[in-house]
Image 1: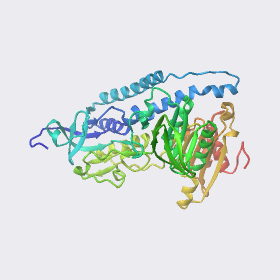
Image 2: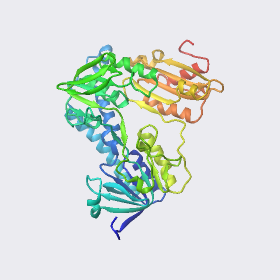
Image 3: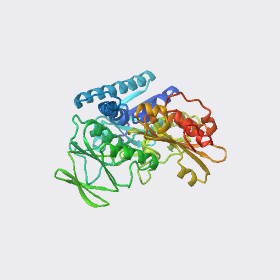
Length: 473
């Protein structure tokens, strides 16, 4: 720091303009605080610009492109051709509209937005360098300093790069690069079959690519309930997607990706390789130690329930423990903003719902049977198959089910786990039941509209309450 450097003062400084960061800035401004938001790239962060929104746009485009196969069973003949350049233009318009809307909200709230890279100088002062550099001794004279009463750090995460498959922006891509493709690869190998890998693999398979998934663990969607993952696995195999489970990617050799699995070494022809093996928190270039913030072995910031990492410093989103999900970051932003404003607040949700926009979709809320019994609960469960759902039958999409996990004694709903068409839209209802401590009787007596997939939640609750209706005990 240059002696005598003049700093701009602000009540709350937010670092990172993704869903967590911009939500924190808006909430702090609504609480009457002066707010400065520092974003190194584009407002909206990874989620709006190169993650959640463009990926779901691509998935929808892929669904439309592949609809002919389902339509044929109804007596409707459809054909589709895909122009990826036009698809990319359409996706860019969606992203631009949403990010522009967020920028307008920030302006209307009086939030000062600064583009640049931030680094803590002290526990009350941050230096910001405009442009692409991280900041260093040679750039001290170009830095602008901001002094704050409270800071909220929401810098998100970035894709993990494998030493065997370094990103080259051409043949080996991260998820961002995959979403920017203006042509469909003939042969695409996706390394990593978590939710990002499965979503991208499914989308490109529907768009016409010959897709293979390579996963180091012995099953698809590790971390998701196995019963849900098995339904998705069957659907992928039926679609012709190659699956290599318990398999490690060793590297490229000519036109092939060399892998090693249960049957030894294998070669997978690959015009493009997408590496989706996880994400790393963006905490290594922030100078957090200067603010008295410590990091754990994974580079995450430990926080208390108020999201406090150190005096006057709060952290939210992917840089903290828990699932790296935009909606978790947004919920944490509410708590961090209240805490920074001196209001009592704590992040203590009963559940953080997780969804996968695969085909069929997956939604998991609350505890699984194994988690509940491991925590000492005595549970009862009931699974309602979508083969018995009138709506699923009319859609021609009967693969899947809804499972309710409940306390055996009082019937409190501990978890609801779903796989099937459109179940991502039902995750909120399931989360509300868990958050409110609803019982299976509460859910069973809630009238669901007919015919909808949502009836399956009520049907599963009726089964868990001991009186199944449209399926046998």
